[in-house]
Length: 504
Ligand SMILES: [Zn+2]
Image: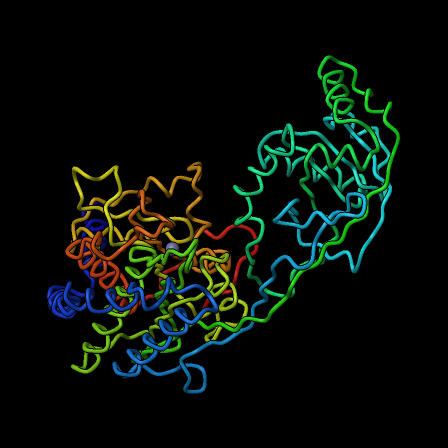
């Protein structure tokens, strides 16, 4: 009995035998470091300006990928088109200020505003001083601006803002420096972060919170009509245990304005489709994001590893499958090669795809997602024949077994599951495009080289890419896709919890 089970296991895991393996090896061999270099040197060149979503460089990258898909002979699955185009909303701070006397303290110059609210013109609110905020629970904040003296981290500010919002405060004002001079330094340091545009879908929830103004203690004192020293005295008394010391200061008024500049930004996922043979309604998806973070502070972020490495790998894997098909060895299932946009802005392209899938999600067998596969992280400097896998065992036992067996047979990497631990603080399973598939109960594998010192910096450049290693990692993804596309049975997602998606 035991022996028979073992034989059965061997049959299951032989992938259809030696000849099949030889065929797969042959086409994996068309994935070369020279070709990968060719793609990557274009995608990560300065000319593409860091491929920021909605910007010129992203459009150029999209055009390059589309023309390569066309050249290969992949079809455009959107009525012949390769672009899945959609609109995003770019939102940046507009005319925003606090009045101190007759003077406007303008956001980014003499005040800082943190929030997305629009006050619809100038507004005047009653303002209360809450000292260090330790008695917020017992204060009446409804419709008021609450001014607090509070130094600390954004985590703390977020917490206090949440509490004030819950109490119905219309605006939060935080004093987090000792004096005007220190506040001016703070503005210089935080300005870029506060003044930047954010990108997202326009159907987001309505913004009810008034947001947070950071102002200098001098200006806060002016609003409350008191001396600066009186504010410090209150905080000191609170620290010494008198929580309600703030009651000594009577309310003033605050006049302010917040507004946003909203622009529509068009962007696109780029899709290339290879039709399968006898199981063509079932879709294997390979993804990589081709956007990056653009130009910051005048420096181009080439994103050679993040994720020109994954995008180049995807293009080479597509070529390998096309060549196989040309020689009559095309995959049984169909393969969708999708380079996605908007990843760096919050997995937007993949989110759009799963909400507007070109092929039914029920027929989508797996997503193999590649993001950062061209480098060696500090943990593997000694033994660099590795790749991190995330998610392979989360939804499908079979997928994990196949992935392991493929590696054992073809690439012999040290498969590192460190980031797959549910308890890992980096939460990588939720942080790249595969997550949008996984949350729809589609099994996924995420391929990743780990983080390094050039992550999201202008120093993530092509000269640091390990092309031999990149080639082998792309081959691992190819072999895995090959098995998943060609095996008789579709892999089963046996580990789905909660609501089950009906699978045929
Ligand atoms: Zn990335």
